[in-house]
Length: 89
Image (cartoon, rainbow, N blue to C red; front, side, top):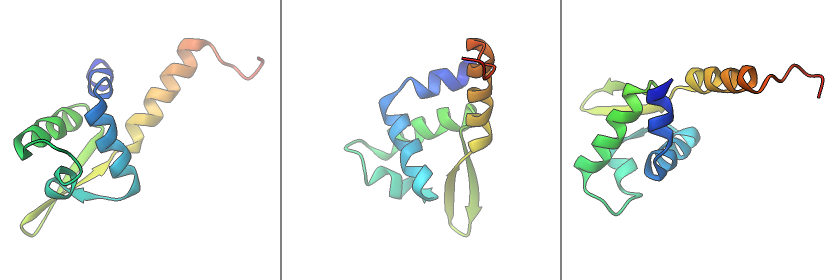
């Protein structure tokens, strides 16, 4: 879970996740939305992949990135358990 929180702590990575929530994208498409070099975007994508927040799939000559909602469900479940929410608030 530590990797997830580290990944989410960065504004750029959160913006990438917001974009991927709308649709799957290539690294180039993601990079078009930022004023930074492509290697920097690749670094952010690697952190997101290592945290299992995004997945990648090779399609021809492109790598397509998509959001992994399962991890978000796990994090929400953890928060609910952490807070002790049981529906009796």
